[in-house]
Structure formats: structure tokens, C-alpha cells
Image (cartoon, rainbow, N blue to C red; front, side, top):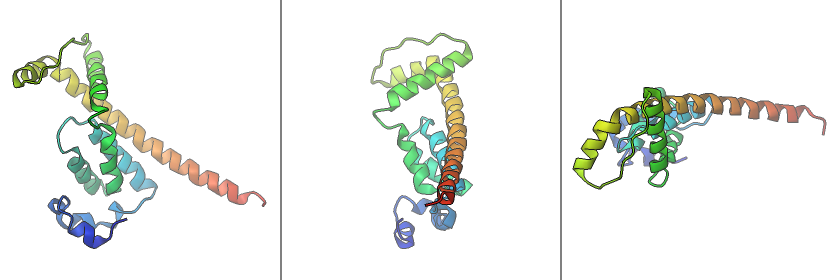
Length: 161
């Protein structure tokens, strides 16, 4: 873990002020890891720039592991973003009861505005649903995995050597 002086003087974390000095943001236990997975996976599905800052803010708000929350946002990186967000759109279209719309990508502002009108509602609904489901699965999955790992290590200790 980085030392407190490095964190205090980090240029990207200065916007959070003294809030980043909370000890729970830097320790790793079952609660902080499970919460960090929930925060990081939730913001991974939010289609906005600066997801890492949102994840850092969420980690500070919920007092969960900050580095893990920020790292998990990179689930949606430039390589994985197109298939994940297309899948999110498909989920939203399915929930709205609409067939998926076919579209061809163009790098223009006009295309973006027209696409947001046609596929935007289904895409945003899919983002919200997938973000929530991923956060819930991440939280309970890591919590269960942590408990299972601890229980298994205790069973190993009890075995005669």
C-alpha cells in the first residue's frame, strides 16, 4: 500500500480532500472487499467518462477499499466496452419488449444524437439493470468467497498434522 504522504499529495485524489485518509479505504477485509466489488462493478456499467473518479467517490461514500473499487472499473476498457455495452443494450431492449435495432457506426455528432433517440432508452435501462445486478452479485459473491476461504483455512488448521 502507498504511504499516506503519497496519497495526500496525489494530484487526482486531491479533489476528495481529507476524505481519502479514512483507514477503511485502504484496508482489505471481507466487508471492504465485498463493498469495493459492488462499487467498482456498478460504475463499470455506467457509460460516462471518468468512471474511476465516480468509483473513488463511491468507495469514499461507502467506506470500502478504494484501490479495488477503482481497479474494477477497468472491466469496461476500450477493448471490452463495445461487446459489453452491446450486451447491455440487448438486455435493455429485451426488458422494454422491443426488438434490437440494427445500426451502423459513424463517427459523427449527428449519428450519436440520432442513436441516442432510438437506442438510448434501452441502452440506459440495460446499463442500470446490469450495473445493479453486477454490484449485487459482486458483493454477495465476494462475501461468500471470503467466508468460504476462511472456513476452509480453519478446517485445514484443525486437521492433524
